[in-house]
Image (tube, rainbow, N blue to C red; front, top):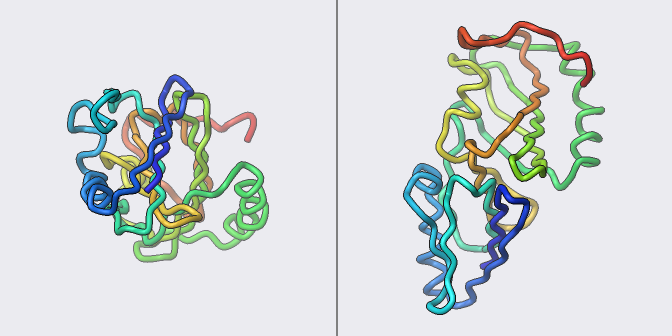
Length: 191
């Protein structure tokens, strides 16, 4: 098992656990409901060890063939991290024109979205979402969770701390989106 902990200071801690029994115990600790809300995260064997404030973690990438707990947002069937900006921009160039032509917004209609997350560390994470249109607003569906869990290109998972997201740019296939009362109605000058 390999772990990469991306922190808000822009640094990434890299850790491994090669002992199968300990890796199995560690895999159970990646509960999206508690991961960033359960107090300090202690990583180490005995001497030395690190204590990390979960509020200062942007995301954790876990590579393992063990089953990891995942919790997708409501109405989301698949949430996958794209490898980099070029992969994101390529998919956006292919998908966006079709979404603009054939938008759907009734409950149960197919939903597809591409999300660029700008994190407090200055890094970006790119996500591809597949699901269905739900009853709640799109922002609440994606970001109203304690941790965003996504699949990655290798076996394992990515756990994103929503508290470390500075900005999320969302391109989506819905024809209408409802927002809360605090929504600012203004068009972006640049995309």
